[in-house]
Image (tube, rainbow, N blue to C red; front, side):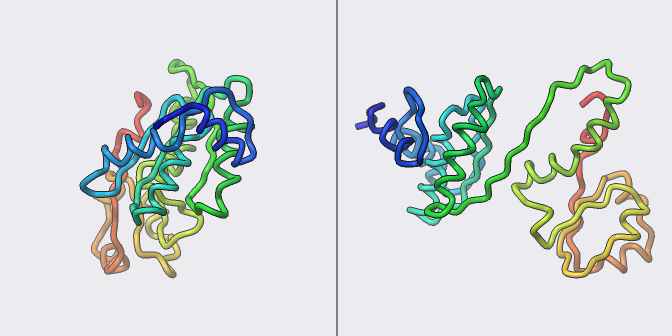
Length: 195
């Protein structure tokens, strides 16, 4: 039932050449089994190759109305991420619309003196990944300091992701201003140098 030659046909159909891809039917069966009761969840593939996992999740959601999300990771050996994984998922976007974002990271040495600031620059991205949202195209926002909380334009905003420490410092006037807006605490470990 789950033949590799089917996987080869599928990636070629998505405009990609790749040796030994998994067939979509195999991954769909695995995802379906793991999300049988709720048709939602986050599917994590740490060894993304041709992007079959993302393709299978998008196709399965279309078939059964599910709300599954996926995260694919790769070390980008031989430019596999840019030339194969991302390209395949981009090519199927018209038939299987899904939220496709590409993040490229680099290794940061733990003894780097600027580590804390490097991590702070990525907290917004971490919030987007954890909550499967796009802060640029939504009714959501972030405010990590008390001054950001007080200066944030709340027009059209329904949810604000705030640093727990700053949330605790909010006064009565701040709480009145945020009435009717959901405040979601961002864990303090996002801001810790030990992360």
